[in-house]
Image (cartoon, rainbow, N blue to C red; front, side):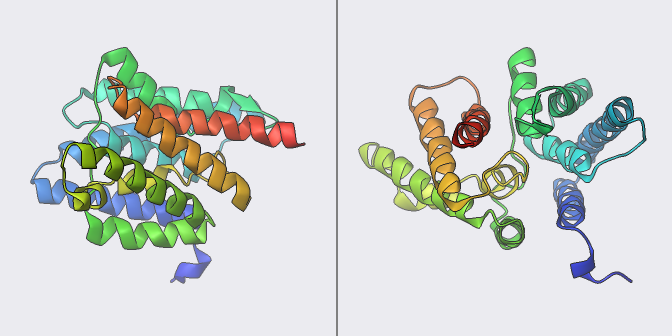
Length: 247
């Protein structure tokens, strides 16, 4: 039996997401969520295998492709057609292999695939598990800490809390709602993606602040689609530019 510390953090995240999605499907008394998630996972894994073979001349299924497929299963609404999940996975993995700079992909694959699928299909997100605080918060803190991305989460959460609380005060809404209905799945699982998020503390503070502000501004401007996804992609691009300018 493997000890937990001997299993890579990506494998741990993949297993967590799979089990979490299974729990959500069980609670819903429906196989809809898990079946759509498995479609996304299968397409992500097979396409990643094919493209990796074309590029490296050897077969390989990466853990990140499995994680990407499962994230798509969490974020896209289960009411969307199965082919929308396949399309999101296709776009996600294609972006990972094609939109690259100095051997690294620029955009968070899941965010890229989900956002452009929503644009193409005029679909919508569901964010399953985002408010299951008893599960997502403790496990999310663990993964963010292990990946050394906890500062990203803290800055994003604090700034988002300030901005949305300020807006809520004008609408005379409850301050506590800004905490209860924060998108914890986005913060802990998507914001912290290892390859496309900052490594240094100063960069983490700047990029997470930009993503939080961009998301809030798009929300105020009544952007017709989920504002956190394009905001994350903007943050990914700025991080890539910032890294190269500094060099």
